[in-house]
Length: 180
Image (cartoon, rainbow, N blue to C red):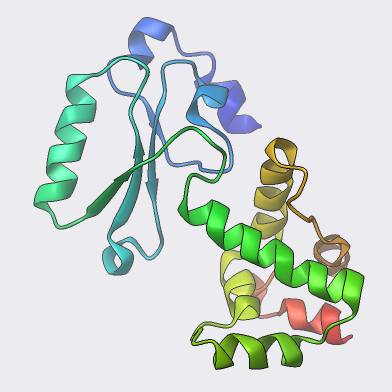
């Protein structure tokens, strides 16, 4: 909420000259009515993907940003103002579904990983949660759930946080709670 409180105080005429937010779990207009979205994926130098939501009124700054990103080899995807845009919506829907399989159906991480590997997925969803961070994963899922109640917010994430399990941020893993 801090970003909303700080950025939301900017006068509209200042912001309309080129205010962009990298936050994808809130729509930019939830942060400021003149904001556009410029969502980079980490690591930026490796993924080189940017989701771009134009500000409500076209700006020279927005046009310049698009040109610079394209000239520097980034793939730009024009997105709409749904929370999560495309990338995080897809990723976090998968994270939510994975945790729902554990929470509601009692699947093990091993069973889920066997299926993922068999269908050609090369990244462990649990490693991705650990990389993003348990706290960040929880917050993004909560934000997406506000817009789409079908997004499952697992109690395992709160349990992990209560045990100070944050993922790679502190050398722990969500699997410690799941397998606990």
